Length: 248
Length: 248
Image 1 (cartoon, each protein chain N blue to C red):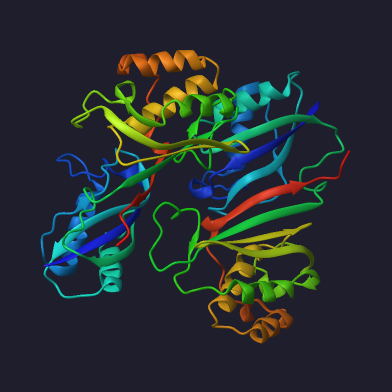
Image 2: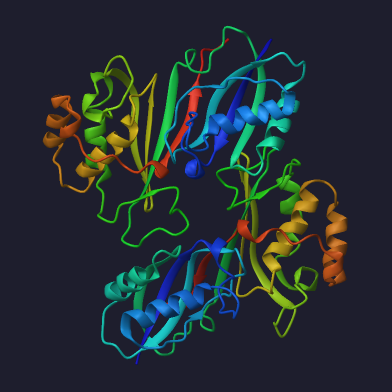
């Protein structure tokens, strides 16, 4: 058996998310089917992160095992060929050691959440950004974001159906930057709770509009209670950005 | 009568282009209908540039006249309301002098043409960029681009059904830049021939891949003959970027 590591870009709009579901096409299923059409083997694809319905990825990572003797360029090109016309692209395929596991070997995951902050509705970015018409104060959002850095109980930002063993996570980075009318929330951690990034984005926006003070945010975070948090920001504005593995 | 100037963003994928056509929805038609639903008046919308089927706009400019007494914020918000769910957004509406004409007063138009230069197909940018798998040498493309600056006969880049009186135009800017795998061709002129930007992009790409030398490009340009030029690059990667008017 050879283990292959894939780096994958996708436009999440047409899928029920990363993970196989009985009722709708998932990214995992489409790629598994393309692998089977390429080499005739049934492989299970293990992703670094299970993105939600509608969430995009710039560089998701996944691995699978097959017996076929081939090379990385062939795997990339052949799987891409059989993936058409789905908006999923294999950016690279490399042969990795059996010890590598896309999910369990990952030491950091990063996401970017994109907001367009203007009065007018979105046209070009309608399916890639969250439209927030009220002016957002990014200095206030950053002050709130700074409270989340480090190891904490993130229950306030945890979806009810989260399957994680513990609500305690360590947040490495949470930066709010503006370029014209576009605001990007960039975040990194070893791992995230279910809906954590979208719940942090929705709650930071409450501070950005001034509906919440920094103290309101602090109180909500300390409550460790999802019902005290702000709304879940929409999925289509979230992009799974990068996965980091230990240097070989 | 009051003359209104609109700044307009749109995602061109669902439209037959800017201009009204009998067989398919155009951006002009959608906005004219939204104006009529807002104020009950039938207005003709005059655009600064007639973008093609599939071409996007970041800041198209257009004007129209109505008798209704209102203000810019109301025009913007009401027209946006009636434009839903089309991917067309009025970014701003301002009252202008009768002497202003979106098309004839414009002194410069700019466009951006976006290429993603990598082996893997496109997922996230599938509808916004041209996928060129062969490596592109942007220094070679820029050297060719530099030959086009200034006043020339652009017949080599002119579509057959172009309605311009003359093939002679003055190109102000044509810059080729790379950021990672994304290459942007940015160009500005008082006005362009029909398909000129897409034909320049397609021909510059011939130089970028090395299929054409700089001399081949120079010879094709000097021929003043469309059949000697390179291919027309796809519409969905082109964005009408900006229109400049004289300072008041």
